[in-house]
Length: 178
Image (tube, rainbow, N blue to C red):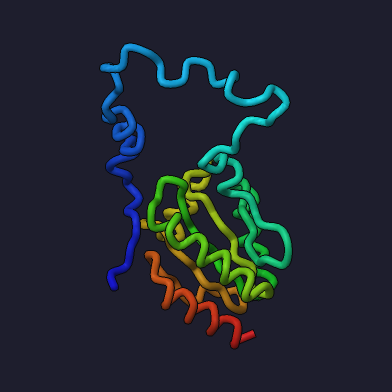
């Protein structure tokens, strides 16, 4: 099975909006399909839930025993990386982006692994965060998703792409080394 990944210089950043604007418009209808949706539901009812999650929810950490930690800023990323290197504890850094299809495809699997191995924190880093570009260059992050594995303060491995089998084997190996 081929690895799925996104190259960093995004060639099509507006692909989603372009495809939405290319959709045919129902200009042939002489009347609106639903002129007043308020008449169809009682005023006390709450609005229907959206089919898509809101953007802030995409990068929020889950509650419970999950080992997933969402990095919120470039400063917190730098301090977390320094802490992992100083404390010599196992950790996984998951570099991702909202616009990356393979990242979205592997996200449920990462969440499952973080629940399965709560002693190994998985730090989810959005590569589009302001102020992070220089550090990503130093770490040689050129594609997403990219996973860096740390053990005893040193980077011990890297996986580039949405390869679930390799990812599970690497986290299992990191778990056994504890």
